[in-house]
Amino acid sequence: MPIPVRVLPLLAIVALGCGRATPSTPVVTPSASASGKYAPRSDLMVIKLLDGAPRSWPSTGFPPLRSARNPAMTPDRDIADDLRKQLGKNILDPSELPAPAAAQLTSMMGAHFGTPAEPRVRVPSWSETVIAAVVRLDPKKGVFANIGAAAAEIKKWKPSAMKATLADWEAAETAKIELKLDDAALTRGSVVYRRWCLQCHGPTGAGDGAHAIELAAMPRDYRQGIFKFTTTFVKADPTLKKKGFGPSGKPLRADLARTIRKGLDGSMMPAFTSLSDAEVDDLVSYVIHLAIRGETEFSTTARAMQPTEDDPDFTGPELTWLFDQNLMFVLYNWALASKSAITIPPEYTHTDSDRLLSAFRGYKLYNSAEFGCAACHVNYGREPQLKWDMWGGVVQPRNLPLGVFRGGRRGEDLYARLYGGIFPSGMTAFHTTLTTGPTYLDRPDKIWNVVHFLQALSDPYLRQQLQNPATLTKFKERLKADNDLFLEDLNGVKLDP
Image (cartoon, rainbow, N blue to C red; front, side, top):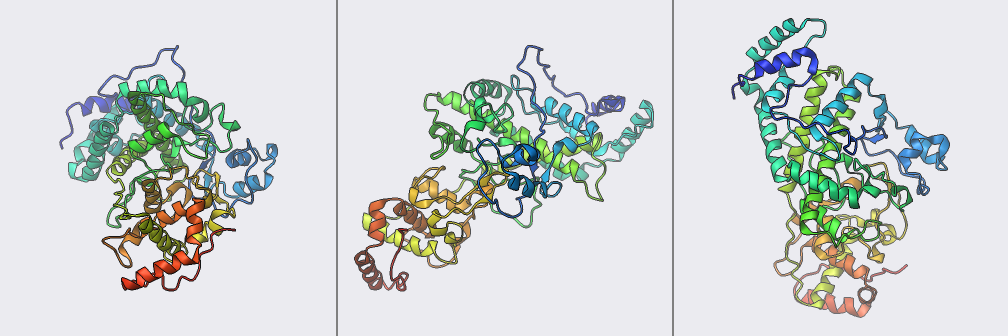
């Protein structure tokens, strides 16, 4: 692809010190009466899963990262001390980003994502992308010298050198359309968000709204672009280079719509049943906008604060190019996830007896080395095993006999959780179990077996049936007649405390 003629005037603008060529389409500047700007991120950032395990649940009103920020003001001094030992390693403080880079990043965030009242997702034009990738100005030289040097760099530039970048740019442009991130939808969605969501999730989607501190668990923080309850799973391809943080934890639009419509069982997230379909659709677009905005800021800040020996100082054009790449990568990963929905196969349980037999199989698989569920869900989750999640929050594996599953207790909901795991919480994805061991044409696959066991475990009547020796004996006879010895060594089931 040849460099467009308009690149040379753009080079002049860059050389004059703007740091970014003028957009090919006008950017509307919000009026002074608009509802303000998005605040730059200032709270601590977890960039890797934290070391160790929490010693206790945090006190109400004192999320772990806030305790780490203000150790003298928290009753959870042990949590604060543990986390402060990980500063600079697994946790970064964005306030330590050098002031010039912080100011430039804030400017770019405003130019590409707008304000709460006038949100947008603006992908740099191809001309701007080429300039950001190729041109490096010398502040010690004059304007005309920089223009000449930049023109020389462009002249040496070959389109083949940016073939991969062109593919990323085209994917980002396409993703913006597929994800419904047009300005009109985002503006409508921002109105719905401010009316119904801002109080808990906050203006940037940080989960720090005015009511958040009152809740039993902090509302979802969108700013890393990851969510717990998704029906997507992208299998890793070792032949392809990972772009940014990858597509894990990114939901379908339908996943976000379901959470809005039905809420999350066992949490403070309510069901918004009165919203129209159009309002939900626009609200989903705006939540995705906040997630893309937040992840672009997060990934750019993290990389700029942790340069390697081979990296330049991330200032000026270098920071612009880093920002552009991260924005493209984030959009690419959202689009990749949107095309990777988990396929839920049929259950193949035609009768109640078939379903109970499947639950017996699930009991054995649950306690097997292949699944290893009991390693985390000790005593079926009755004994808390506290863990860190990827936001720096404290979580525990689900107490399964209670039957409260935040992502839904329908068969297809539980199947998706088992197949793809819960990425931000570290729950294992069991998609590989489908290709091991026997498969059955007229019986559920292994994941369905475990799903049926989980549903039976949380039902008092079915739990009693599973523990009834007569039921097990009957099924053993049936399996023996079919020459299937799957349950041959199963001598008893104990599910109650």
